[in-house]
Image: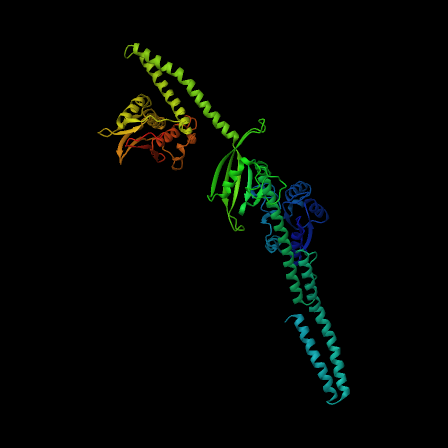
Length: 130
Length: 465
């Protein structure tokens, strides 16, 4: 069963994504910020990540930078595909400086994109792995 | 057919059939058999009721309870509803879970947005140095930054602020009242706050700008009021004028000596001699310098409304010829053909000769500045419907359409001409022509030269001042 890691500081958004992905038959792990996401990666590696940008303690950007750093020694870490959920506070050009360069980056979605849209993309990328 | 439907059909069928079978097997009229049928009915009804309870009733009762709790918890779903009962009930549970989770997420998201937007607006508005107020109907203060409250002398902790009643700083009271009473889309007023009793705090100059705004949520339009400290701006402007005044006056005296003595020396020189030519160059250069000084002085005077016109009866062809004479040597040196296109008859008008000659000199001087070697500049005049029209045409680079108004503003210069003069000439021309109740404009196309024109009324008039 493919595993999805949802990283968002807003619990209600995490729960919504968890529900939709679990309904679709995925195993879901949750994290409230970048640090928690790193802990989750320590437990087991997900097949896909849904990543928020603005989070306390460690933001989505910082998390991806850290992932890239750790990926030097463990190539599996920065190979995990991920989508980025962006709020209106960000300009894509600024985000691109970190995310677009990352190995696993798939695309951006505006915050509150219906989870089914993201799910469809995940299904497309993971293909028959689920 | 779905599993649950088959199950329900089978149970209903059994519930109906079993008592009937019991009755039938015993034959009609037997009490024993009736009892057996009742027992059979009861035996079948119990599991039917249980199945219905577990498959439909319990899930729906759960749904109803959880929906109430969800509403009471302000749209927060702690844990999704368990999927139980028949597949139809599970479908309803799944859809409801999805909807409740999404509703919760949307609420959280929009709440965050509102809080963030407010914080952003506040951060922006508190950072700017201007005082900013947003005033709703009947002068109710909707929003303001601390700076605005301080300037207007309104205590920050005051509740229900209404303008202009709450304004404590008397210097602003009239301007704020005027801004709020006005119906124009945009209004501007200047406010002087006198210095404190012993000169501290120092006196300040403010500009009160107000603009009407309409928000869908407000039934009546409100006003945004911006209070800007323009003390420095005004001081700089005044210092600049004083500087121009001083410099021009102090420069005039030595320049007059140069011009006068060059003229004297020139008289003593034999005609055609090298010395005479050199002195002519000195005289022309100092005349040009004198013209520039006049332009600066005129601009300052015209701007302050201190220019006194000395109008006399003038003749247009004569004025063109004088300006032509002044510029012919420069044109010749630059290889530009300077010519005149004049009417056959005299053309009289009224005006201040010194000022109007400077206008024409500026226009011809500009054309000579921008025309290339081999180019042409034509000075013309003609009578047109009770007015005298002067024109200076060149085949220079032309002026872009969007700049054709702007170039008549003070210090406005085309980017490519940034270091060619003060940028005062055309502004002075406009003010001088307008003081004569005339108009000035340019007709130009990029790459195809320019034609500067101004018209003056032909009928002699009393001086405006």
